[in-house]
Image 1 (cartoon, one colour):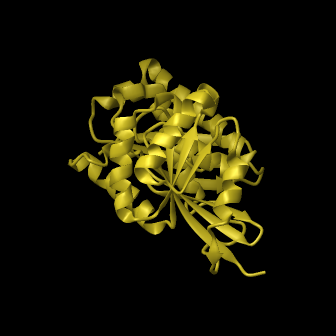
Image 2: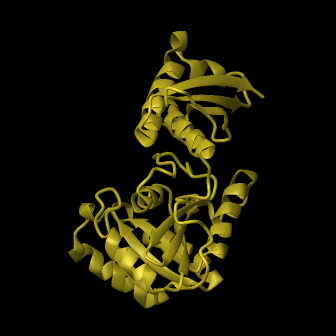
Length: 280
């Protein structure tokens, strides 16, 4: 049986459910999920192998900043367009419960410049009636002539298999880029760093800057099969140290314990997590 491939970029506004969808498709948590803006800062590739077809999903930063020109958005914008350029087909995801037609039209106008097929995915369909959605789909299609429309709920795993079945139809003969056992282009250390960043964003709300950097400096499987992990948290302002530590170290303890639970859930082993806070 000839091997086939299809490369898909997942694009959309912050909190449209892009990372939730890719994690559901892959079956593992490989992309950060958080309600804060642009929590996905690097381009992560999720790999789904179905029979002889390899589907690559490029998870991109939120597209809110597409028409914004400033230094903070530069890297995010570059990662977004890299994902679009690499892909054969674009999935544009919409939060059905927070639909802004003017914003959507601006986004599609910009994305259609690359002249690639676009699927529009209405996510969170459990929060909107189909009766309300159908005229919206017709309106969008009349203006842009979209390749296909899908409705799903990434969180509740509704409509995902139907989407995958359709995407496979667009695959083409090619050697696989990744082996059959790989599920992402990122290694375990990157996933661990992302889990800590996700946890910190959850607990610290807007008190911590988005240019925080995390490095997993040590990862070792012990003889007892338990895992020892050391992570360094780099911040660029001294005043954030007190916020992250919290009163009597209470905040950093909460972050460590919660992150440790997330890692244990993924690896299925007892985790010993050590955090170090460093001011650059």
